[in-house]
Length: 602
Image (cartoon, rainbow, N blue to C red):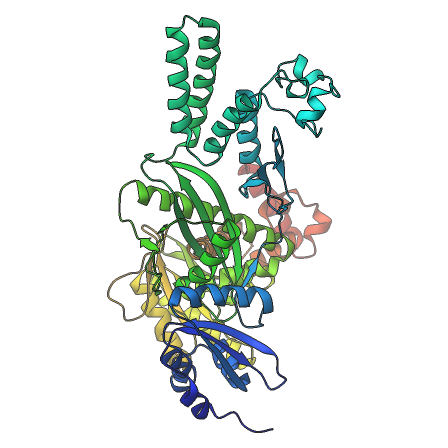
């Protein structure tokens, strides 16, 4: 197989806008991209390889042939790229996931047109409005229309000839007031068309136009003293006012604009779209994109916009977006609002994208819990500036009582969950008095000296419960063992949840709601609980042992034997002489019984 020579290919590529296609050695199309300068864009893949991420470098190694298509403008390249990706679905391109069929509201192309929801888009001359990503929104609009305007629901062929011959009879819909009976000629085509004119305006978001039209009719009815009809029109106006108050989100001067926002993580992105007419959101949708080459949010948004606009048949000239998109868009205007009502629209769109992202990821994680673990670990790696995922984390905590009975505890988390079989505690051996720093130094040294001696793997992250002092003591032991460069070690101070790194003068603060901080707090609290439990047990045993040593004839060694056998002073007190004879002689048993008789235990 001849090795691909990208230099020869670059000689043929012009400095023009267009679309490029990468093919592998098997003749499979593996990637499609757009560019405002084809030569510069394609050459960047081969010349600046050190700046590419890992996935893109794999793509470049597979390229065996490059083809390209020149277009007149960058907007043409934008649209062509989108259509080609949809057609060929190359392996390394972003995948738009959206397998739903969304509902439309259709005004049928027929005499006395019916108005109804449908999921089938048929090119028969009918007028379609939508699609509606929210079925609830579509039904709310239909309910308003039906309440305002009596329309026929039958599928009869209402030709002038059929009506004149009296082929049809009015049905129950006419009797209950939902239809004016065009089938028997009770409603003229002109009157029916007037209702449809209002309906079209409502579906296009032009509610204000319909309200003004109804007010003119109301004024005319009042002037003609037709109060019954005026009352009927007043009811329609009230209904439209209520509908408009629920639908309008911004000033009605903001009309015919598209709003786009994006929320992403390591593997997915979610793009939300809002269509605004006269201050009313008339269409909305969120699409999911699966990343293939660690694409940026700007790249993903530029891919999603033409697809969504094409799906909704949008002709808006103004697009509200969160950041600049590197594209010459011809007659399109990109707006990046910083404040005001357009910024409120962008914020609303982002809320929808974030909500959709949260719900979808929750679904994925319920089906595959490992995904949640990987996401949390990846977030911790990013937040804590680590080079590897913190799959194995250990946390140290010290406990003492007024300088007495010092103990240390270590808890272990694996894949962000407690591994209780790996928890350990230490009775401090080399420290006298209340010296928390020396206690931490001893515990850390003993822990990792043993792991090294036994050939066990070291954790990726060590957390020290305490501030700079405890962190420095732990680091001293790690340096002594020669492993200070092999692990990340941080200290957490309780009061403000400050995170300290060795050598950093100032602490780092994480968002109080971040999952990384919650995991660290869980580790710290678990270490404290485990340490306190062990400390209380040790203190209790030593206190009981001291109490037993007050009994004549029982020394330290005998007291320890009794506690080891019976576990508590209460069980020793309640023990029968035959049980006590396993440790004590008759004189010691009599002394013990006499002591407890004179010193009752509550």
